[in-house]
Length: 216
Image (cartoon, rainbow, N blue to C red):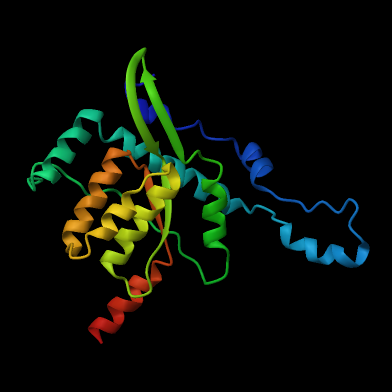
């Protein structure tokens, strides 16, 4: 036990052998006519060595998030954001990227790796004391094609709703005149409230393309 309920909720890392066993997918041809078996080949998934590295990076990123912030820090940050007084708190998180040519399977690999890590943990007590929180270990969202800050913020809020069954998006959508910076602040508060461990942004090349076109 680490005296940090969010950190203690992160599962132990699977061995490489267990990882391969759980992530691989083999089609079941039992009872399938011979002429239909080729269609089942789409279910075949054979893990490659680099995929375990991706899994390791994601799990360590989640664990690092909870190592670098205590529950008291979280409360202070939320209060600071609500009071628009955040100069004393670092709200930037560590980041990284997974690069590769289109179609190589980056997104499907990340999704499969995340499927081995619980997305949501509901706490009711910790160390024998009441502790209520819906913790989100990971979110997966797509970068909007126009790299809109508002669209990405709404996507993150919607992903939170899907993870824990909340209605943050409905309330945020009602505030149509909300500025992008105010919406981003809401996203920060939501993520802090639910101790989001890592956010994976897919299709991040959209941001690069928009930046290139902007500077041309």
